[in-house]
Image (cartoon, rainbow, N blue to C red; front, side, top):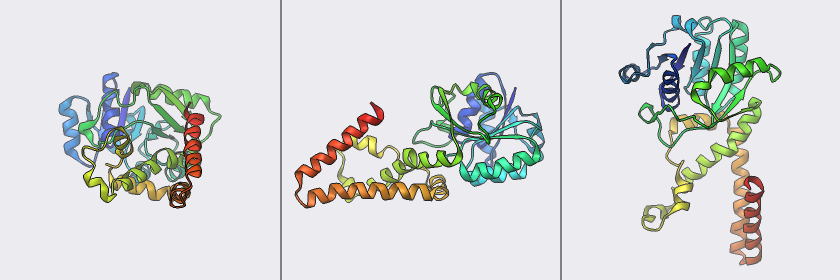
Length: 276
């Protein structure tokens, strides 16, 4: 089996390593030729993925930014294998799937949106590992939900990554949920460390500080694109958070201890209801 991987960052390189360990032939495209050379030297890249080699791929995984994903699919629409499986791995789905579903249908290949729920605070090839996705959930956004043969085909195709579970979602629902579970957390963490007090945190910080600031360190280019493409959902979540924070602030400024206690109890109960 042959996999084509577009983009050799953390996600793409981790896929490349996983597929190589599973015995697949791994072809890679990246705008940085030195990354491809490094992959070849390290032994997890077999060759460069050129446009004419796309037809040889049983699976193509596109691991670049949303607009770059759309551009690559448009530019290579005639080069993908007829009936071949093409998947992305980006953090938003509406804009990507809207475009790529149409292109795939017109040019007779299969596109499925995908979002691995895995990663870390570091980016780049040097932090990649074959086990990055092991046990992690994979969200799938197919064009239709009644084609179980396609879902089985996708599961078989991504088996080398060893995902722990699969979740089917519509593109709009995916983006709504990701605004809450991921994007809002990154915004809050990034804003939190801008407190003037943060410069003096050493010696006073423990688990709470580390947990809240873990995702403050991010790839600004990538995340700004993701935020802007999903701004309707993300702004809604930010507004909701501001409303809730205002309640805590108002309780304290008005010296209403009972109200503050109730707010804290409500939040604690809500966490228990959500996660057990």
